Every structure is written in structure tokens, then in C-alpha cells.
Image (cartoon, rainbow, N blue to C red; front, top):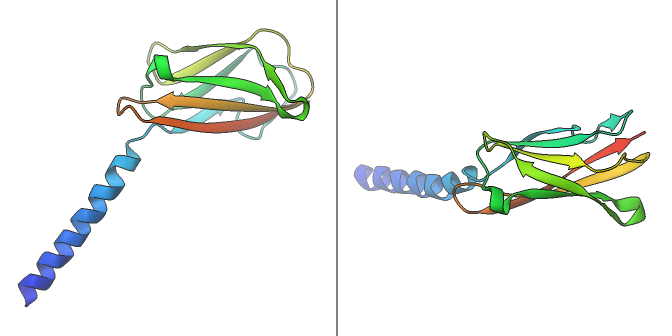
Length: 122
């Protein structure tokens, strides 16, 4: 009976690990510039999102929005040479107000992850 209980415990722990390990392998945003919820005094020339792993350039980008005015701001994005950052060049100065960065990134596991970062100019 002890062996049955021990075997059952090992099976349950193994099943738990099997279900949690794949989720932890997904691409995660680890930092941004401007930082999340920051207020910057001057319009940033570039926006940088840094991830925990290399992203696939064909499936990784972001859009910059000014939600108060339902406006999309033109930004040209590229993936850095180390593959862990998406860098966006802002084409014109940002006006005072709130902004939202909506990002999509896929890592080597092929799963697309999405998220957003808010910041304010003012």
C-alpha cells in the first residue's frame, strides 16, 4: 500500500510539472523603455521592449496608440541583433498625453504572446 501511495504521489507531481513547464517557456516582456506606467518629460525618439528570450522577427512587433484620441502613431519596429529586443523609432514627436504600446512576440517555441505597456508624456 505504501508503494501505491508513493507511486501515486510521484505521478501527480510529474503531471503537475508537465503542465507547468511549457507555459514557463513562453516569451515574456521583462522591461520597457519608457517603463510601464512611467511619465516622461520629453517625447522618446525610440521605444524598446526587452524579452526573456530571442524573438522571431517575422512575428514580433508593436503598435503605438494614443487611446484618448483613438489614434495610431507611426512607428517603425525592428528586432535587435541579439534577438531579445524590439526597438521602435518614433517618426514624429509625441504630444502630451497617454500612450499604449500593444506588442506581439513569438519565441522559438512558436507561440505568439501579446501584451501592452502604458506610459505618459507630460
